Length: 147
Image (cartoon, rainbow, N blue to C red; front, side):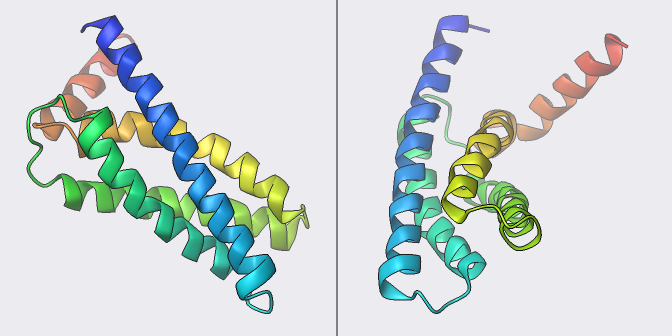
C-alpha cells in the first residue's frame, strides 16, 4: 500500500466531507429557520442530509476515489453504506435533540464529526473498491491473524 497515495485520499475525503457538511448545515439552517420552521427538526435534518449525499457521492466517486478502477455497482454499494450511516446519523441527532435536549446546532456539528470515520473506511474497502469482497476478506483475515 502506498502511504502517500492513501494520505492524499484521506485529505480529499476530508475536504469533500467538509464541503458536504457545509451543504448539509446550510440546508438544515435554511429549512429549520427560514423555510419550514414549523416542521419537526429531525425530519428537516434528514432532508438536508439527503441533499448533501447527492453531492458527496458524486465528488467522492470522481475526485477522491477516481483513481481506482471503475467500481461496478458502486452506486448500489454507496446506497447501502449511506442508509446505514444515515440511520446512525439521524438516530444520534434524534437521541441528542429529542431525548437529551441538546441544542440542535451543537448536534449538527458533533454527529457529523463522528460519521466520517465509518464512511471513509467503508467507502475505501467496499463502495468504491473494484473487488469489495476481496478487500473485506483481507481485512477480516488480518484482524483474525493478529488475535
